[in-house]
Length: 388
Ligand SMILES: Cc1cc2nc3c(=O)[nH]c(=O)nc-3n(C[C@H](O)[C@H](O)[C@H](O)COP(=O)(O)OP(=O)(O)OC[C@H]3O[C@@H](n4cnc5c(N)ncnc54)[C@H](O)[C@@H]3O)c2cc1C
Image (cartoon, rainbow, N blue to C red; front, side, top):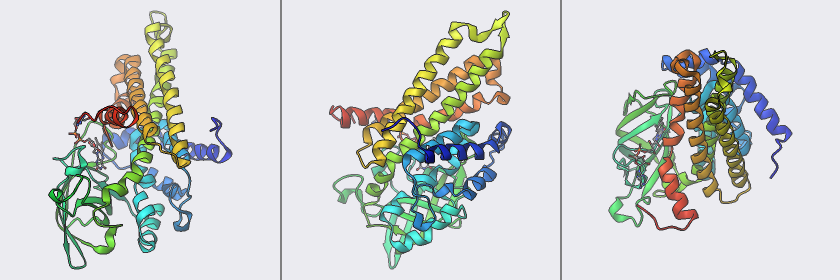
């Protein structure tokens, strides 16, 4: 593994920078203040072909690795777009992976090209109000009927459901009482987001208002057999294929937030004069920033090694989780410290660090919480007894 970026990777970072330069701080603040999906940014990313960067070339993608995707996502987040920029395209990068791996030729031909060109948007419906992180206990039910299924239930936190035309949906097809494990008997569907049958209620939330998150209520949604991915009952296992890459991508996005926050804090610490000297001359200002730098560099190494393992077909479970955990914590600390460094102005929207702080909570909570990552490392890496 080399620490140097190769020519392709350098050009990917430069492309991400070129796209990001067209969208300044005011753009992201406006999206945040007005809960506005960053459609112009999304279209710019789509027109460069980046929405399909990890999808097969045969369907219009670029078949790039996770290392390349992480560099792209880190760069757009680091530009100041933060989670708003990253989340507007995140689902496209590894979300459709179960289709790529387990879909039929016809499903791939039909579903992937419109996602890659940006003509269609998808959302991801897994989390439910009553099951939370215990995914196997989800209750949304897909009842088998002639030629397809009828789905009823509800999901929570479904991001981009306001703008999506499609949904990747996990539903129970076999009663939990009849399965060995709670995660058995779940089936994965990719289907039209039929607004006649799915009611969407937006959740007003702390940050990343540009990218909506919602409660959705599914009432007798008809889904054809052709919309089922792979075999019935194996949906959760198919999702596992995309869990590690998703964690690594979120880590990269968090890293971008942390680095942007640190840049803003350092600049302010050099320029702001109080008591006749720059505030950055005080060790209580400069030492925490130095710590942020160290932690972000360490997080970057974890992201690089985790993506290297994934791209080389190694088991990346431990490091993917570690990278997500550590990058999320480092980003949150850096964003917090940025607000502290800017003092009162850190609390003002026009200085942007409060937006970064609000957004930096997301990688700590989703798609899996820091606590569950510690559970995973304790059990799967250290061999300690399962605690729950
Ligand atoms: C901004 C945002 C966007 C999201 N987008 C999507 C999306 O598009 N699609 C989707 O399906 N979901 C989405 N989610 C949901 C997200 O994945 C869940 O919020 C997350 O999985 C946590 O589930 P929960 O909120 O139900 O927490 P809970 O399961 O209720 O957990 C609450 C707390 O208890 C802790 N806890 C629970 N069990 C244990 C245990 N055994 N050991 C230690 N601690 C434990 C957790 O770590 C957490 O701190 C999103 C969430 C957010 C905030």
